Image 1 (cartoon, rainbow, N blue to C red):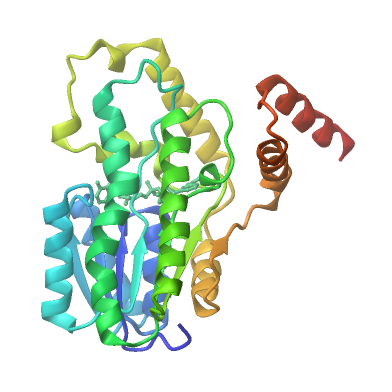
Image 2 (image 1 turned 135 degrees about the vertical axis):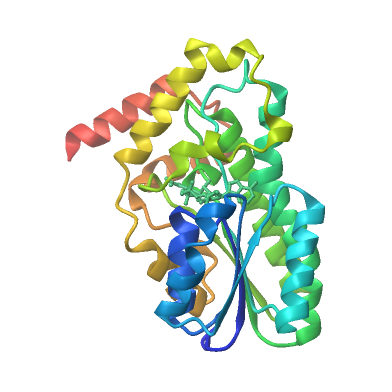
Length: 294
Ligand SMILES: NC(=O)c1ccc[n+]([C@@H]2O[C@H](COP(=O)([O-])OP(=O)(O)OC[C@H]3O[C@@H](n4cnc5c(N)ncnc54)[C@H](O)[C@@H]3O)[C@@H](O)[C@H]2O)c1
C-alpha cells in the first residue's frame, strides 16, 4: 500500500507496545484508525494521541480478540462507520513462559485463542471485505522470531507463533492463487522493550483460576522473572513502528529485523533438509562458539 491517507486500519493490541507504535505511524499517515484492546482504560489514551499526530479519525473498541463474537463487533463497527477496511494489523498478543509440560491447559487455550485464533477470526471476516473492495489492501500479522526458530524456555509461545507464521504463509499462497489484491506480511521481531512481560495483567476472567497451585509454584515465578529479564534487556521500541509501515508500503512478506537469529534459522532449516535430529546441547555450543568468535 503506497497511499495511506484516508484509508482504514484495524490495529489490535493498540494500548501498549508495538500496537501503540503502529497507531502512531497510521496517524502520521492520516489514516482512519480502529484501535482495539482488552485494556479499555489504557486504550482511552490512544484516541487523543492519534488525533494529535494527524489521524483522520479514531475509533476505540475495548474487545477480547480471542472471542470470535468480539472480533465480529469490531469488524461490524468498522464497516458501519467507515465502509471499508484497507489495512488489518493482527498484533494483540501475550507471552506465557515455561516448558509447557506442567502448564495448566487453560493457559494453552489462552495463548492459542489470543495469539493465533484472533488472526483466524479477523482474516476470515476481513479478507472477503478486502476482496470485494477491489482495492490494494494489506494484512500484517505480528508473529515473532519465535515463529521461525525454536529454543528452550517457551514451548507454548514457540508453538503458537510457528502456527501464526504458517497461517500467514499458507493464506498468502491462497490469496495469490485466487488473484486477490491483498499483500500479507509477518512481523517477526526478537526481544523488544514493550509491556509483554505484564501479560498476566491481560488475562481474561475465563482463563483465571487463582486456586490452581501452579500459579504459586517456583516454575511459574521463574518463568515470569525470565520474561521480565528478556523484555527489559530487549531492543528499545522506537524504530519498529516506522520499520513495519515501510514494509507495508513495499508489500514485504517477511519483516525479520533481528539478523542475530539468522544463524539459528539456518541451522534449524538445514537440520530439516538433512533429516538430522535437533540437539539442544549442540545448538547451545554452536551459539557460544559464534559469540566467542565475535
Ligand atoms: N516484545 C517482544 O519482545 C516481542 C517479540 C516478538 C513478538 N512480539 C509480539 O508482539 C505482539 C505485541 O506485543 P508487545 O510486545 O507489543 O506487548 P505488549 O504487552 O506491550 O502489547 C500487547 C497488547 O495486546 C493487548 N492484548 C493482550 N491480550 C489481548 C486480548 N485478548 N484482546 C485484545 N487485546 C489484547 C494488551 O492489552 C497489549 O496492549 C504480540 O503478539 C507479541 O507476541 C513481541
